[in-house]
Length: 560
Image (cartoon, rainbow, N blue to C red; front, side):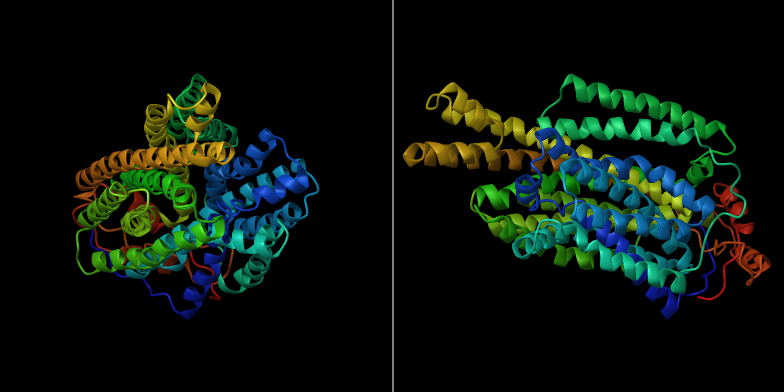
């Protein structure tokens, strides 16, 4: 294991800066779900077609996923604070444009700019956290809080959406972003110093479209599988094409000195497994959300806002999970064992969900809480491991890779577990109602639980009740089977963590502040002294190259 000297501890100003940096995190995660309750109002006002409505939802995620790698690399080269300020300005302006969009086309365009802004905000803020907290324990605590807030932000977005729509017009769900971005633009220059690589080399411009062409077809194919509830030729070809282009992108990164994703990121044995484990954790989180949100509304019959409020309950446990896991590791617990325990907790949560019947609110909430707590435990620890093991000047690229992996994992979770649950649902509905409904009505009821609820409303009477009961039973059975599959995946994740991380030491101590060398102030020699103060043992041969980068890392700008 690597023995490292403790870095300078962050003070009140750094922690205040961290709170400010939480603003874009919450807003970007909330924007994933903020449109849930606004769709009916948008449909009434803007009259989007079915394809336009799909793009109103999906263009944000596509822009975000496609540009994360590019924006992470740009932040490392040109300054993370600078990119953060640009992203905040774009995010705020696009929020206003979306709120007052007079037609579907302009709303889609505004959502695309929101995605671009989100792609700049996420890796920039995570990279800045890496540089603000040089002490390993403080950094682990900050990232644990970060991971918990990100998970809670998605649930909070749907609630805020419901509250705003209940009292204001649909555009108000976007205006929530504006005050926070104004505050961010005012406080970041005062609290957060600039950080960037002082010797970035040339920017690999051809890799920008290549990275997008690798990421977007895969994300599209997985989302298409989830939307169509199955595997078809178009999504499969899309995924295959993306993977093929991805292989070309990886080869380019491995053979160029000015690579967008430097190969040195993977020189520490924990970085690559951290990305895979983080993606697997997101797979589980989003896969469960696919079922629990529908269960609360369509099985238990709760209104949209009531269901969103109930969905916040598991977030209370999530708020404690990340910091508790970080504290356990700091007190000497083996990181791989704690991550494995987090996966085991997630598997238990899925097991509880597999026991739910058609009237089991508390079973579902408890299962979701146990699952989410385990997943946040995993995500906070592997994020800290990945960010802490890379050279400070590469933290933005590392964060971008982690977040891109999350996008893949979330899309895969909804596609795979959603397809499993849908296959069971359709089979059960046909077995239960195949002889009692006309063929056209049966086909509609078999599509989704929501469609079956609509059919039951039209049929009415005893026949309508039978349709509704059969559909709810079928959906619950599908959730049970998918939950069992999810539990198996998480048990495999526990084994993966134990095998790949058991000999991985803690994240390297701070070898440098990693800040912009353009400012006058603290000399680079002081950072070199910090790097020299960290003795190398055990793993030094494996991370020697990273240590060399640390010794030459840029100095910190004063004024914090």
